[in-house]
Image 1 (cartoon, one colour):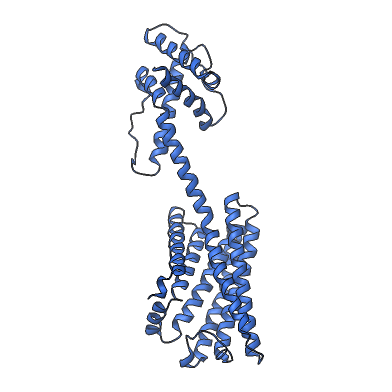
Image 2 (tube, rainbow, N blue to C red):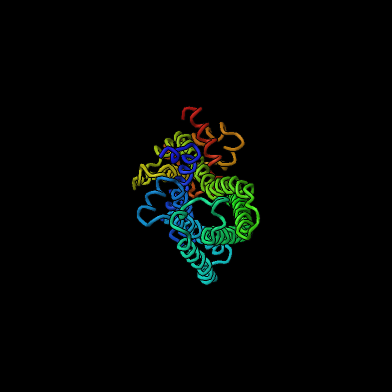
Length: 373
C-alpha cells in the first residue's frame, strides 16, 4: 500500500480524478458520442494506472488467477486509446463517416486483446504477471504478449497523433494548444513503446537483451502520460478560469451599476422585473442578476429619453460628470410633470452588443454616485 501513495502516484491519481470528473460533467451536460468517447478514454487510462499498483494487482490476480491484472491493464490501455482515436477521428471526419471508421477501429482492438489472452495462456503459470526482463523475455508467451500489446499501443498512439494533427487545424486557440501538448505526450509514449518493442524483438530473436532499451522507454512513457493528461485538461481549465473571471467581472459591474439603477428604479418603478431571479446559489445567478440590472437600466433610460436633450451614452463616455447632470436634469423635469414629445430617443451608441452598452453605463453610474444623485 505504501507505493500506492508515493508522491508520483498521488499526483497521477489527482490528475486522473480531476480530469475524469471534468469529462463526466461535460458528457452529462452534452451526451454526444465524442464526449462519451473521450470520457471513456480517460476512465480507461485511470483504470489501467490503478491496475499497475500492487494492491490492485494482487486483488485482481486473486480473483482471476496470475496474469489477470496484467491482461486487464494492457486491455484497458488499448480500449482507452481506441476510444481516444474514435473521439479524434469523429471530430475530424464529422458524424456521417464517424460510425463506419469507429467500427473499423474495433477490429484491431479485438484482435490485440484476443492475442494478449492467448499469449498469457501460453506463459508458464510461475511467470504470468511478471515484469518483462532479460531472464524471461526469451519465453515465447511473454514475448508475444508484450509485443502484441506494444504494437497495438504504438498503432493507437500514432493514429491518435495523426487525428489530433488533423483536428487541431480547425480548433480554437486554447483547444489547439491542449491538443498539441497531448500530441507531444502521445509521441513520447509512442517512442517508449517502440523502444520496448525493439528490446523484445532483439532478445526473442536470439540477440542480446539490451537493457538500456527497456530502461530508456520508461521516462518516455511516464513523461508522455503526464503531458497527455495536461493536454486534455488544459482547454477545460482555461475555460473554467475564463468563466470565473467573467463571473467576477459581472458581480463587480452589478455592484457598480447600483447607483444608476437606484435613481432610475425610483423614477420608473415599472422597469423592475417582477419575476424573482431563479437559482440564487447556482453559478449562473450572478450572470442573470447582472443582465437583469442592465436591461432594467436600459428600460429606464428609454422611458426617460424624451426628457433628454443629448445622447447620454456618448456624453457619459466623454464627460461622465456632464452626463450625470443631464440625467439629473431630465429626472427633475420628469418628476415635475413637464410635458415632452413622448418620443423615445437613442440613448446608447449602437455598437451592437450588451457589453459595449455597459461601459458608458458604468461611467454614468460612477458619476451619479459621485454627484450624490
